[in-house]
Length: 262
Image (tube, rainbow, N blue to C red):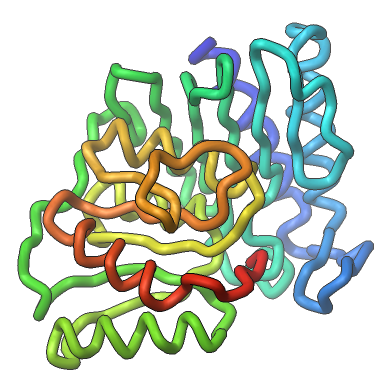
C-alpha cells in the first residue's frame, strides 16, 4: 500500500506543477474564494482512476466529485489540490492529501507538497516519516514562544480565540494563517510549529493530517475534544503541552458558532 500511495501522490503532484505557470481557474463555487483550477481536476483524475482500477470495491470521498460507496469497509479521503487559492496566486504553499480508512479509522495517509517535493507518509501505529526520516511533534512548553497555525478566514469566533491566545501568552504567541491543512499538518508533525486549529467540516481536509500528526506524537481531536473522525467539525493538532489549554480556548471561542469551510 505504501508504494502505491506514494506513486500516485507524486504523479499527481508532478501534474499539478505542470500547470504552475498558468494556473487557470475554471470554476468558482458558492464562495468567490472557493475555486477550481485545471490542476485540481487533473490531479484528482490521476488519483481516483488509479484507486478505481486497483481497488474497485473501495469507497471514495474527494473534493471535486460525488462521494462513492462510502459504506465500504475501505474508504479513501482525497484532496487533490489542498490550497487552490494559494496555487492560483502562485503562492507555493499547497499540497495533496490522501488517506485510507478501514471501518472508519485512518490506517494510511500521505501528504505531498509538490513545490518543495516534501513527501510525508504514515501508517497506523508505525510512525510518521517525512522524506524517509521519522518525525516528531515539538517539545516546546513555553506559551511566550509558542508558534502556531490557524485559519485564513477571520470570523468572530476566531477573533475570540486570538484574544484568548494573546491573554494566555501575554501577547507574544505567533500564529500563521496558511490555509492548507496539508502544509499545516507537516509543519506541526515535524515540529516547525507547535499546533494547528482548523474549523472545516470537510473530511478530506483532515483525514490525512489527523493520522500523520497522531503518528508523529501529537494530540489530535475535534473541537469537542473527542478523537477526530470523518464528518466532525474542526480539528486541533498540537503537542502534548499546549493541547489541553488550546482545547479549552477553542471550546470557549467556537462553541455555538457557525464553522466556515476554509
